Length: 162
Image (tube, rainbow, N blue to C red):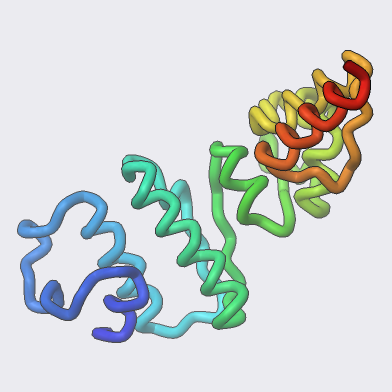
């Protein structure tokens, strides 16, 4: 259990604390540590970063990513935050009225903004910008997958074409 606390970013000094002494973010981390202490192969999380500050959100998503990559855990995250889904998830499953409407790679899902919109899902801002730029005549390569690379590409094309 102490190793699990360390893994979620809580020191062992929190091991003996009452839940009443913990902040909301610490309570969430403690709950996840409890799950990790059981060493499951699959972890299912429903909106695990809701209510966390931006730093806590990134830390938790990085933890879930590491659990998958480093510890070979299957991590299933239910989320409405498409920025997180795009950045951290390998696959997307869209469920509507109990039926699976889409199940494929994150890349295939977000590379088709019209598909996202047809399912009432707003793509991440970066994807929307990439789509708008393409519609405006910019030739944005498919391999550009983050806002920084997109900005560099825009500057490159503007310099090239004046």
